[in-house]
Image 1 (cartoon, rainbow over the protein chains, first blue to last red):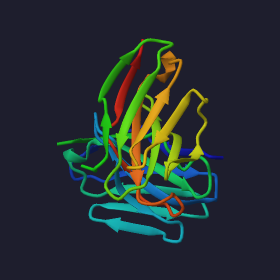
Image 2: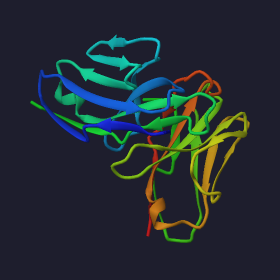
Image 3: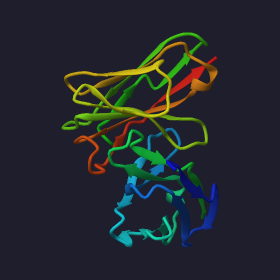
Image 4: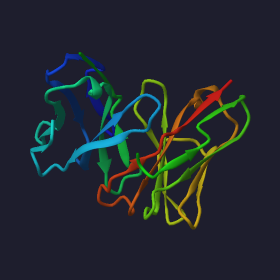
Length: 113
Length: 115
């Protein structure tokens, strides 16, 4: 019940295309859903985050769509660029829980020029 | 770049040894969380420290222990190292106790290899 399931495991997109990464969760007590971007040899960096009372949040080329009833959320990267090539992690925060931030297993995105 | 620093960057130990990893939190942050990231996996929460006290622990055995100092820097200690402890250890700091999903800022990590 503490898991966050992320798909796909890897994704290849052409430059200018749309990258879509999906996540699903079971625990309805999660109340904050961040996405992190990680480049090789670096720590994860916060990209964008959403709370469950909002269905969509957009920041530049990055959009989170949130479906509370389906317990799913997704990251859309518009006009994908080679510099977006990285591993993306969705996560969920459990207020009051001992697990704190629970991460998905990651999606390795490759954007071809 | 976040203001979170970790040392050392890389470390090689043998099975059964003990290791101490260090983390300096971003200025103004009083909460530090530690995560283990195995190769090809997402980070897994180890524990969190808030104002020098442990505030939550993930599914890790007691040989994983930690400290937070008055300046909010932190240490992660692992005793009796096992081969499966080989991973990237990440430290993340945040402004306040994680009661509101406060953003965590990650350091670059320490890569530990246990032989």
